[in-house]
Image 1 (tube, rainbow, N blue to C red):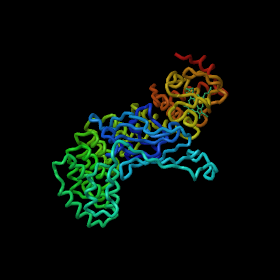
Image 2 (cartoon, protein in one colour; image 1 turned 120 degrees about the vertical axis):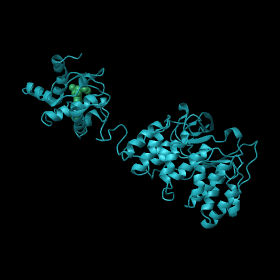
Image 3 (cartoon, rainbow, N blue to C red; image 1 turned 180 degrees about the horizontal axis):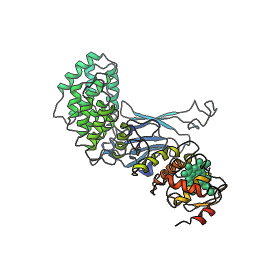
Image 4 (tube, rainbow, N blue to C red; image 1 turned 90 degrees about the horizontal axis):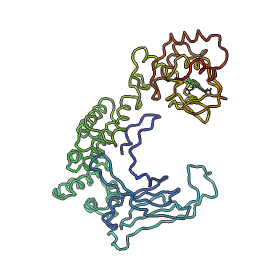
Length: 466
Ligand code: HEC
């Protein structure tokens, strides 16, 4: 749900908080459905059922209820609805049928994966597969709704049915009917609804969706629902608004109002929608949402949406598009310049990695949280000018030192060395005084006659660790 903020090229948007209880998380899942059928007991209505095809082979069932305290839901594992011991069982889709029973497709195949197997692998099974039908024998089936060959009036009345799939199939049918005729009947149907019915706002929402399906959003219904009593109807209306800027001229203004709704779910929908608006209008929506508390569902997507609309990644400085720092003046300039140098191909990033954690299996030690980096300035400058090779202890691990570190003395001038070192001393969670070009100049001069790489042993003799 909050995962759909406008993404930034090459950047993963933050993942929403996980709904499913940890012990019951599975993958890869294919096919999920919400229980919505009078054929099944009242207490399971709204449960999420989810198939899985590797490891656990079957269908898990979880409760899914609105969390009144947050924008999200509360969910608890209820039961394994289906379990198979057949190792080729591949439940890949399911859907509630018109009679309220549940159909489940087993693709039954020995091969499964991301094309690790050739497309023409003879083990690809084109013959087997099953369709299961799950019923609740002590309860009656549902009388199938009339959809094919139904009149428009009959179809509209189907929108009151409790079964989601019947309403869904009805809306699809209505999309294929004559647009003008459906729209005319739709407004009469809405007028005829009983305003005291507890499901009144639900029915109006169905009508709004029908108009959306015909690509002619009913702006009056939309406005009515944006002010609905039920927050779920308001949240759903915001979702329609999100996609209808080409038909609703005051989309941005309406999103600003929704972004200040009393209910967190509505605010979440509003700022996620706002993240897609161009420039100022999107920013206004986000700022409106930011004036109210952001809960655990909203915090990360909000930060990312705000960064993206300002043209940078989360955690980046908006002005330089680089990492954030509280260094100032000349030191800040060094930091910004140093980040660019750090990230050049073949410079530090290639071995010490974007997060400064190195790659210990390849013998590249970390720079994050390391005294070699944040400690004595001269020692660090010497490493960088002349390179280092031979056994070294970094963060409690001994690196054998067969891989040498490139000497940068010939590639980078004093200012550039100062810059990249100021950066590594203040990135990846490190915090240490900047290194100034004058200091690099002094050290370079002191060691101008030194030949070859330093060793850790040699450096520690000259500058012991604290
Ligand atoms: C070709 C890979 C490579 C590149 C590029 C590289 N390093 Fe290193 N670096 C190493 C290796 C390998 C060691 C450990 C050498 C040893 O075992 O003695 C090391 C060690 C270090 C150390 C001391 C140990 C530690 O983890 O703190 C620092 C500081 C350091 N590098 C900083 C840098 C900086 C700054 C740059 C960019 C200007 C850079 N390195 C570029 C491979 C590299």
